[in-house]
Amino acid sequence: MKGHVERGRATLRFWPVLSLFGVFVGFPTPPPGQGGGVEISVERVERLSREEARFQVKVRNGSGAAIFLTAINYAKLGLKDESRPRLFPLYLEQLRGKDGWKLVAPCMDAPPPDVIKLGPAESMTEDRGLKIPLGGVCKERDVQLEGKFRFRLAYFESEKQAKDYIDKLFSPQWPEARAANAFSEEFEIPPVIKRR
Image (cartoon, rainbow, N blue to C red; front, side, top):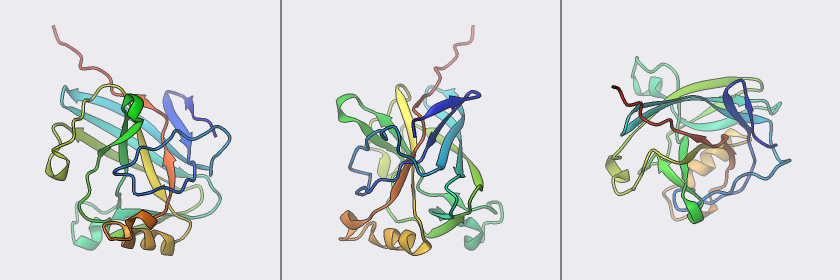
């Protein structure tokens, strides 16, 4: 389905596609009329400085069946401050002219360790940040906080599909890793407000 703006927030229904691992590939904008009933919406975008922005992203399963998502379950790691699992990866992409959509973050050097279930009509909201220059394995990426952005999330019909996907990432079989992908509506990061 075509994305639309609803009460000040951008919403787009998920579009199932088969894709190669998206770190090296740009992803097309979903065609009108296709959707799986799962929604991702960018609830809030804040510019903190020239180099930093924060986002609030909501994922809602309106598909009528459970979906499975890759994540990090911090409770399993013994981190009491993080009681909820966190979606990982939740990709942030930027439109780069003729090159199309390119991955900004996260940069991954290991596959996500966990799979979580999101039941029909359930939703989860996550706060994310982006600070440039990027660190770690991302430090070579040239990222500017101007232009059009979107979030992308891979999702699966079963826990087994999600685990198979995780097993293939970072292995010689990575080209065989398949996922349905959801895309948010395009958005821009507001400019820095100059104080007088």
